[in-house]
Length: 414
Image 1 (tube, rainbow, N blue to C red):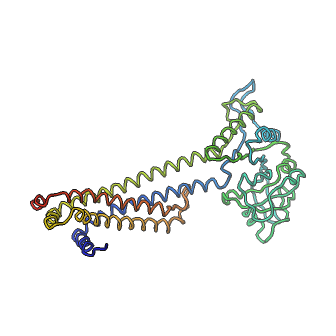
Image 2 (image 1 turned 90 degrees about the vertical axis):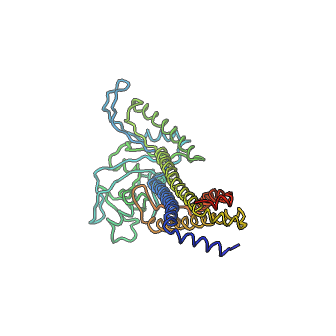
Image 3 (image 1 turned 30 degrees about the vertical axis):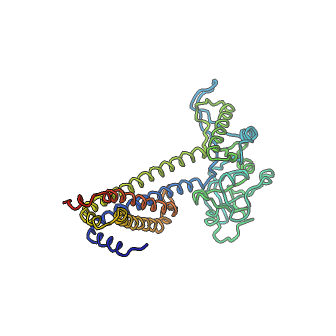
């Protein structure tokens, strides 16, 4: 039931102690404010990490080769290791149960791409049809490479939106137009965009078989790329990718006579890298929760201390109330109302200010590994409710202590 006299009493008490009430409210509001901001940036960090992995499939395994650094089986160090079609075919067959998508990659170096009077220097990669899934390439128009292109050594090319904009400014539909790569005509059959942004769109794709044939690549490959078959959980995917990586590296080391502890065979496991980053973000989120909750606890302790001071100041008043017949619950309710009111107003003030700040500034924050920091509103509301409950408990114990004081003792208090 709404008791106007009780509320008038609360406001009178607050008005007599404006500075003390203000500072108490600031401590409570800052606790919620700091917690929400920290949780927002924790989520922003997770968003940023996920965005970093959008450019490629997170279950990707990338293989490359370097120069041997150690003697092995009578072979001297300093040997250049080169991947070949047979390496790719054999690995694809041996580990077919582990593989979802696969592609060999042949790189063409030092070539210029021309379209009529325009020219540019872009990356040229010979890839397989599966590379679209591995690289997370999305087609804007046309199609990606297919098996017919591979089998018939078709001179077809997939260009990016960036390259189309720079070389073909006046062309609305680039499909079936021809580019010259090192003076050789390639027909455009598709335009793609990459989630990794323009830095990932600085290349064109042609069939691996065509690139090897036209650019004198013989049967060599620069890289091999695979994705691991999906698993039920992220942890299971990490385990599967690690097993596949170990088996693949062991096979290639044996095939090329490379020592087990030599880095001439390099393998990048995106799943393991993703796990490392996601574990880091989880730990940072836990740390943010810890700091925020400690700040809230400090605010609640401040409320408790203020309630103790209030009870001390109103000891005689409480004694008079009890002498006039006030019940203990009435005394408890009087002090609790003030504690809950201050905590509620301060908590919601901190919540509204922090949520508003994230809403206004969050979408504009785009720095490395942090993107659009936000907070789930239900979580924030839950924290405010818990804060109010904690504030009630902080006021309850001083109130209960006051309610138990004998009237004669209270009236003697100095």
